[in-house]
Amino acid sequence: MSDEYVHRYSAEAIDAFDAVGEQVMDIGAVPAIEIIQTVVLHLMSAAAVYLGLGEGENAAEQLDLSEARKLIEALAGLVTAAAPDLGDHHARPIRDGLRTLQLAFREASPFPDAPGKGPGEKYTGSVI
Image (cartoon, rainbow, N blue to C red):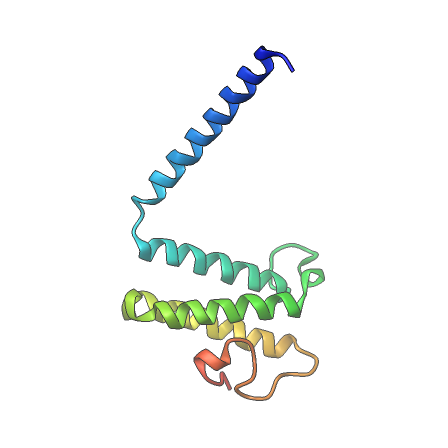
């Protein structure tokens, strides 16, 4: 291995490390509420896609209740844990979206869970 190769590789690694450091510093400037809301949005969007509610002609082909269940469960846990910090102004629309996803899951299920046993219902209570 030549010294030139090692030097070039090291320079690329240092540049990549610096770029990651800049990203970490940038996220440090974002309020926690905004980060939580971003994560909530990603969880909601992904759950909707796995419930077959995405856009496009093949949206129904994306139906995967197992994946949707995991995402809704994670969303319910996050919303429940973060609600006191989010305040009612931010938490209410998130809870409404979560409930909509829980109801859509129940509707999409060929064998719906018992009341209180659906995804996230151990955190939110029954949605029926």
